[in-house]
Image (cartoon, rainbow, N blue to C red; front, side, top):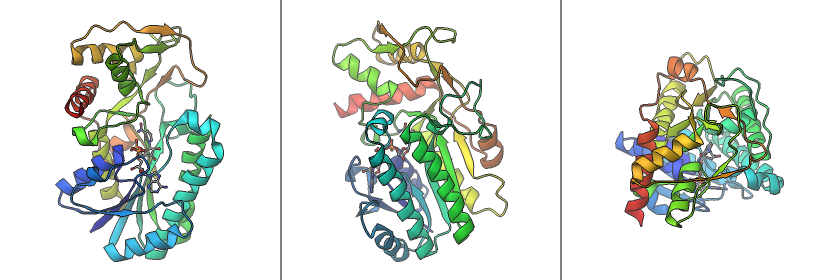
Length: 322
Ligand SMILES: NC(=O)c1ccc[n+]([C@@H]2O[C@H](COP(=O)([O-])OP(=O)(O)OC[C@H]3O[C@@H](n4cnc5c(N)ncnc54)[C@H](O)[C@@H]3O)[C@@H](O)[C@H]2O)c1
């Protein structure tokens, strides 16, 4: 059995590649190294290919055939909400065009099982305590829209080509399983706080008047190592006879506020942190925490790591890289 991991040199993809390697599974990575690093894929073969380029479907099909792939995990995408608002065409072209090539390649090479990186961004600004998969997605930015359209494309490919697909809607991914796999982009809250501390600056809290216990936004932080495990559970699920669902939230079911995350960073670093209290940003829901019932009951997956585990692993990975 071979799994082709597209975007496997990236932050999340490389954690999944490593887990599959540890389980003795054959892995081939396809990546254009635009944001990924070749060193992250270890001993697995790395095929450098831009999945958005002309003819990429055919070329990827060749890789799938040659490697005897029976499954594909597709991570490769742009992922910055703000950038997607400024450059929507790039997001439509690359995220949707890239996925179209991946599904075309799977159809040509008769690969049946596909796991796709979706996002909590599909939900937009839901006003609920726990977000369930039954809630109708209402993305509020082009990034979230490309992920939702991507889920429709998977459903179409299932109908047209008999594929089996799973879309995993990741909530807030953080932490690191090893220093060389750590997130290098300063875009998510934990890296933003650590970066501010390194620069001797105060991390900024955007909004302190939300209807939450401490007034700051609440999110569901999932450890990237737990998330990697969810992909393996999804691959196993696709190989089973019965498959009641195609879309799963991946989170912990527990929310942490911005101030709680800052406290966790203070604990992990042993430093006192006094944040700068700023205004709200447009498009930030007060609370975004997922229901984990479906993934627990259907895939048998649940998170094992706490917010402190997540933050500690990110701090340690950063210290090892410096
Ligand atoms: N990191 C998060 O918090 C988060 C949350 C929700 C969803 N996601 C989704 O998870 C996926 C992976 O995210 P990540 O954080 O690991 O990002 P990343 O940028 O670290 O990884 C993406 C990988 O894909 C490769 N890539 C990008 N465009 C490509 C192309 N056209 N052809 C071939 N390879 C290409 C990059 O070189 C990189 O190795 C993305 O689809 C993202 O939208 C991420």
